[in-house]
Length: 338
Image (cartoon, rainbow, N blue to C red; front, top):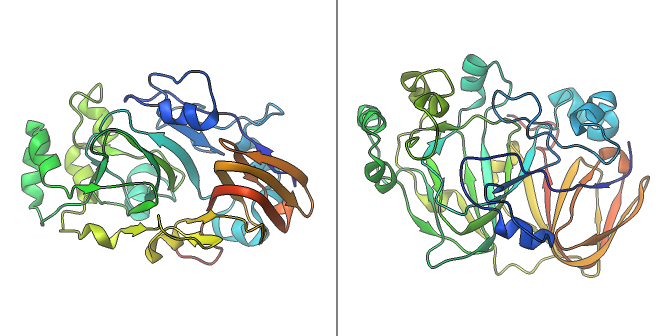
């Protein structure tokens, strides 16, 4: 496979409201009341489900099926040597139409022990839009918390205590937040992000009441006693996980704090008037403008605001040109440790 492919919206059902910002970006006529996530170039399913979440290509195949058939063409030999047939990446558009619950994600080692998965779920948020009076995010505890206290909050479903213990940070477009495994967090109403994450759906949700059907959905069947073993209860300076790039004007702007690179890479591209890019499995999210993606082996593709595009490694060297703003999402560079 060598040609880049434009992808339609892929919005598996979720438990929270949102989707208007996704519809506006894509130029769609209507938003879905519970379509707050668009899973882009996804080879990942919702937890415990066989197909929901997977991306279907225009030829009718699942992207996962296509990658498994030609892994080196899609991913490159060095990537396959490191991660086998996995893309090692899931990209989402996430539009929080309401505040998300307090939750966290497992590390690779925890996911291996409890979910038989090579990947945990470290993630990052590229803030591309906000709405409402007070858009904010909640990354990590302000002060260290005793694990026993957290357990009591979970048993009592003390929402005020859980949310009140977290850092509370106003955000605007150009702010980018890295969420390592174990860090408790929530996204506030009115925050629209491009999310990069490891390719799993492991969310351990300690604030489950009024969001999920049952506590079992919160601990994914392993029990909260076990799940809380993956929680980082230490104090976190929020500025240690945030990179603010709203004023950056370079053609290529690295969006994430340095520690994120072993899990995924994200750049904002502004061709002036063109940019040459090395071969890589890549997901493009076009935020604004219009232009062209030209590839060494896969031809040319017109780009416009709202397009989401998957580019195989086999497309070779490429060039983007035009008046464009693009978020470029890539898996970790081969040789990175995850």
